Image (tube, rainbow, N blue to C red; front, side):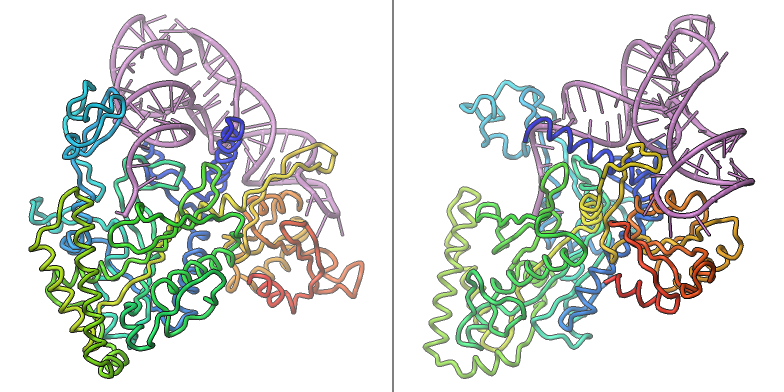
Length: 543
RNA sequence: GCGGGUAUAGCUUAGUGGUAAAGCUCCAGCCUUCCAAGCUGGCUAUGUGGGUUCGAUUCCCACUACCCGCUCCA
């Protein structure tokens, strides 16, 4: 990327930030006290924008689907949840900084990592001056109850997903859902990021929109349907099928999520996809795709769609000592028809897999797997197979996990437009406007009497406002010249303006009595609409 | 956390060791028959805390925030 381009992108970002502040979309948190690093507030219009995005996601994810239900869990949960999920271990590392080479290393690894400047020596032995080991707690801690003590430590959730796993059984038992099904949730999450950066992109308090979609393990599909549908380029993934394994479901959700972004105005040109390579994948993930948006400051992640296997529910099963599983009648019936040889073939295959996986995991820690470990893994797999044949399994999971604040920022960046134009006197000036999709626009309709000092116009405009406000977020404006009012609303992305003029009152042209001008934001095009049809006319254009 | 930069009104900028300037926006009034028109008036600022000084927005130090680069990103 050239420097000139960097500069332009920075300038563009600064314009967006400035507009957001000037028009009440995004403010710095606690600004009157100097601000707080990594925290941002949404002003009146930002709050509407976020709400529209949140509602659009919720509607597509659960209301318009028969196979997904919602959840709204607490931010503070039992601390053991974060031990089971692995967050307590992976979020709290002792780190050492090298003041010479500016590197940061895990304190327990400096003996084994070579120094970036002198690769012949390890970090522990190189000459660089190093700080004392310091703990990096990426989870915010608090205390439950008034006593500040170790046993009262709790965490603000670093992701919303774990709440879904923790309530999986309750949802299953109360909602008449059957695998495959999903549980979705929108809510705040907190991460004590080392470096919040890029405006609201990496904040310490942010809102996530997550779905855990529970599916049958491929082995269950194979027993029930004889084979698992294999994915290949061009495969039909428009509607779910019974014989889909995790890979098809994963592909399906990537496409489904892309369609969502398109429905709110992000085109495929705005987006990019990063398929994680095998070494990038976490050990519990089978595949992970990042959906990226081309922000002015770089192409960055909007959403991750991971195929996580049964890792999370298995962890919680182990920690609480109760299977977080599902009884599948169809599987039980199908398994009953298997011959002993067929069952044994599956068991043999799974035991070999368990052994290989154990060896691989150990190899990651640069050691050999012990016989005990292998035996334990095989025993666990044996019992997994036995339960499978009885119809029980811990479902596997496809996890589309999106950031609401990142989406809001992406929508703002995609919508931002500047055009040079001439004003009424022929003077050149810049027209700035936000080209929001009407679905997400904070304000839907501007309502204007052509002139303020004509009471009939004002009264009629007020009447139109009252007619529309319950269905559409409207903004009534009677100040300044009509062109200025249009420009003001264009700048915050209001897609339509309704102007009440003398024709509305029946002057000049009697056939135009009770009609208004509807002006479209992007083109400025105007059309004449009878008041009796106005509401339907506008509502039709919101979709 | 490291290095570099920045901090003056709602926004964009000017300027000064001694009363802080402008444009735009915004508000009010007049006027205005469809794209930021005009006229009049008005509100609003030196990020925070120290130091030097008779006096600091200006010089120095610290802090905070933001930007850029590194780093981090389950």
